Image (cartoon, rainbow, N blue to C red; front, side, top):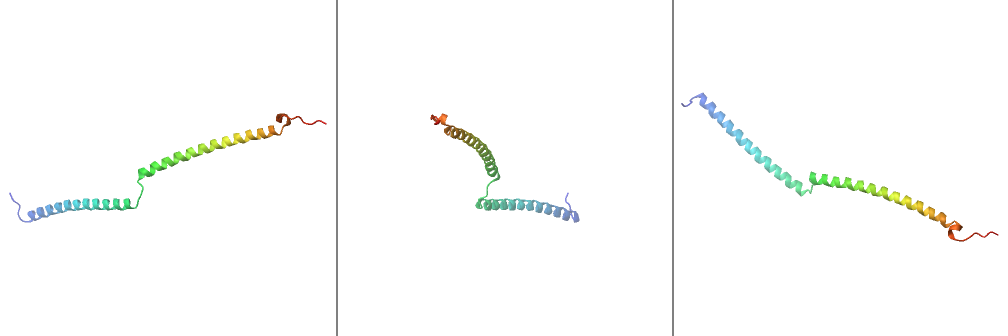
Amino acid sequence: MTTTGPNRIFDDFAKLMTDAAGAAQGVRREVETAVRAQAERVLNSMDIVKREEFEAMRDMAIKARAENEALSARLDALEAKLSSTSETDKSADSDPVTLGTEPNVG
């Protein structure tokens, strides 16, 4: 059974629109692929860092900063201890008994 007249025209038109929509989707995919490839080439030529690399470096910097603060606090404590030790030594150096000399009592 074949369709004739207006029904066949509508069927052919519907088929044509379906084919056109499929072709348009294919063209859209090709254009997206080409644009994505071009954008990737441009970004690579700009020497832009990838997000994963950035986050890894950020984590390393955070860890280094924490270690730096801990070492700074340790250094401050050691310097304070050294300062108090050297002050004790200076006061012992000025004490005649500690120096091994007796004061002249007249």
